[in-house]
Amino acid sequence: MTAVLAAPPALETAPPDRRFKRQRRLAWIARHSIAIAIGIMFVTPVVYLVLLSLMTSDQALTSDYWPNTWHPENYVRVFEVTPLPHYLLNTVIYAVSSTVLVLLSSVPAAYALAKLKFRGSNALFLVVICVMMLPPQVVTVPLYLMWANAGLTGSLWPLIVPALFGDAFCVFLLRQFLLTIPSEYLDAARVDGCGEWRTLLRVVLPMARPGIAAAGLFQFFYCWNDYYGPLLYTSENENAWTLSLGLASFHSVHHVDWNLVTAATVLAMAPLIVIFFFAQRAFVQGITLTGFKG
Image (cartoon, rainbow, N blue to C red):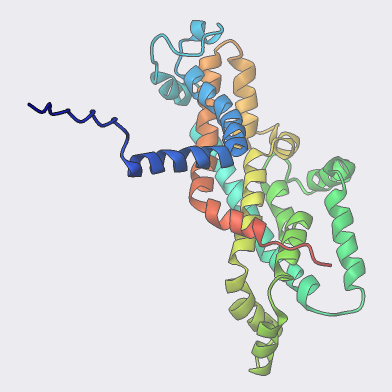
């Protein structure tokens, strides 16, 4: 008789496609390990802020990181104890008006500095850089006296009207972006009979949308988070307070109710997060395409 030897059982191994996907996932994590660590470092405080806003007032004063019981009614209570919608309306008026006016005044200035050759353009650009580095506190006293003599303190006008004259940082950012646009497009438009304004509107603006979006977001975020300006000009009139000033007052009144303070903070942060989520592609493109040519 011949003995029939049984074949050894095959080793159980993972399918090749699954192993390949796992290796690709591990390689992706290894390549982006620093970005993942930085992202976790930035997201963790925001997550803790949201968790803190859902705690009770007593638990919020402890070292707990997770709510024992969930209290989403804290967000409803914030609207009951403070005129948050009114602060939000003032902030939207301030941020949107300033952003629109700054872009309307800064884009032509940046176009002139980037694409028009005239005597003193480099000196004028140097002045813009000097103004950008000038601390706003230097001109606080004369500006406040000017608005006080005009009877406009206690309102949002001292914060909105200066946007008519542009912003040094926006002019600088837009000028650097416009330098990346080839001048051949502008020369072709001029050959076809377009003036400078028509060239700016028909040729430059469509190509400069990422840079304009980046400058607009910078200005919008600055106005949304601005505390110094509203404190200086609107502190005497609560009806003109913005979110930053209203949150500071809310914190001073409810300094022991950290759950309510963090809930109000989350509500103030939410619009910015939503706006940046939808506009991040244009914002990042505007930043990465902005050259630093002389």
